[in-house]
Amino acid sequence: MSVRKVLAAVVLAVVAATGLSACSSASDPNVLKVGTEGTYAPFSYQENGELTGYDVEVARAVGEKLGKRVEFVQTPWDSIFAGLESKRFDLVANQVTINPERTAKYSLSQPYTTSEGVIVTRADNTDITGLASLAGKTAAETATSNWNQVAKDAGAKVEAVEGFVQAVQLLKAGRVDATINDTLAVGEYTKKNGSADIKVAAKTGEVSKQAFAARKDDAALVADVDRALAELAADGTLARLSDKYFGTDVSK
Image (cartoon, rainbow, N blue to C red; front, side, top):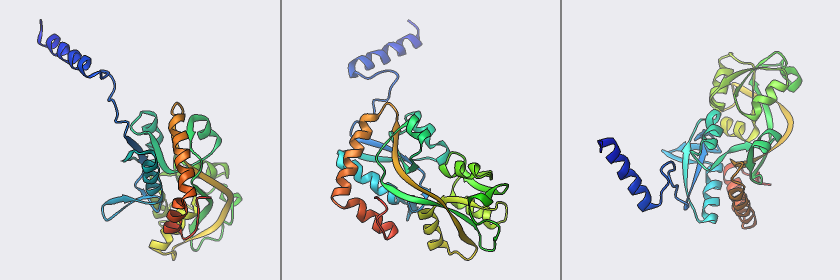
């Protein structure tokens, strides 16, 4: 028998003895793997070398309710759904806006954040006063974000970026005319970095709701997450975390 055949026989023997599938990793049922950016304050970001943020804390609280240890997998936004589909993690916690396309493709939880979109421009810009005036302008957006589609629907040309911070950098440098994002993220940025160079030029007029996302065939997990979110709302945890990060309850 060749060395290769001997090794194959050993592998099969181990598989048979342990009950493991040769093509699966047998994930720990006590661990909930969660995909998140880690660069999107105040929802998911690094502070003193530790991952934190509103979405991160809500995900951890959900894990506690489910009796699972939460492990975060930091992933750029534009590849986060590919990571979910390839089973790198079980859940996305990164302000996933509920929309018809995502509802059709993924299992989405009940919302845990409600907010609205705003258009950000340079402070000296007087041309952009609403969505209608974005036609023909250039907006910096992440390629797969809800705000990317809002900008395109308004007639803007989109410059793809990795995240909101990069969008603001391009805006300040004069390389784009605007960026659309969540009012909570914009408020956090201006609180930390000031607003001398940029301003909120207008609201998009859309109220958005954000949820956790799982694979379409993982509806049972989402049902458990929904029950956990209901308990976190009832015991005041969501309101407390909202107040911690935003000074108001954004969970309703």
